[in-house]
Length: 190
Image (cartoon, rainbow, N blue to C red; front, side):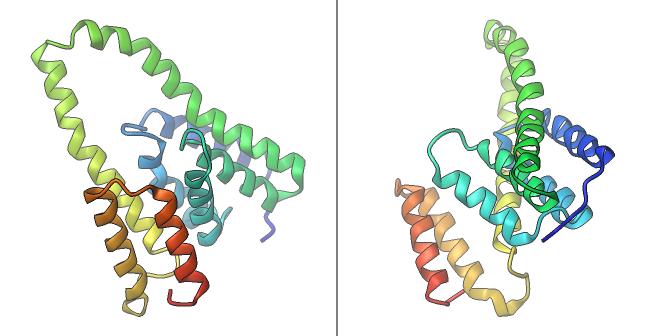
């Protein structure tokens, strides 16, 4: 895939990730559906397989899972040119998603800890839990439909459901599930 990125496009990418950074309640992965909408559907800077691979590779790698945003920027940069644009894309996306949320978390952490017994603060924290779960389910749906959303893709949906149940009900490590998914894919079942 080859794309052309103008300075305004890079600025648009940075501004989008700066905005998403302030919505990363529950982690950067909860903003993956909007990243998919922006990068794949609206702009066409990434393909569905590149988007899914960025998340899968970053989840399998050691370190914070926010690294998938850097990998998305890397892939956008590779599509736009060579290694220098890939590195620039990595900095734009990773910096854009990390800086605002880090500053906000630093600024509010001490205040919320001091006021942790205030009813409104406790209520706000409890009210955010269903929101985070819904965002994670939305992310799972985006990843599960990367190859298509028709009924002919029912094996992928079944594997997704089984993996979700295993993650929810067991302590099996995600790498085992990723490995099993890779084997099933390599054998051509999905």
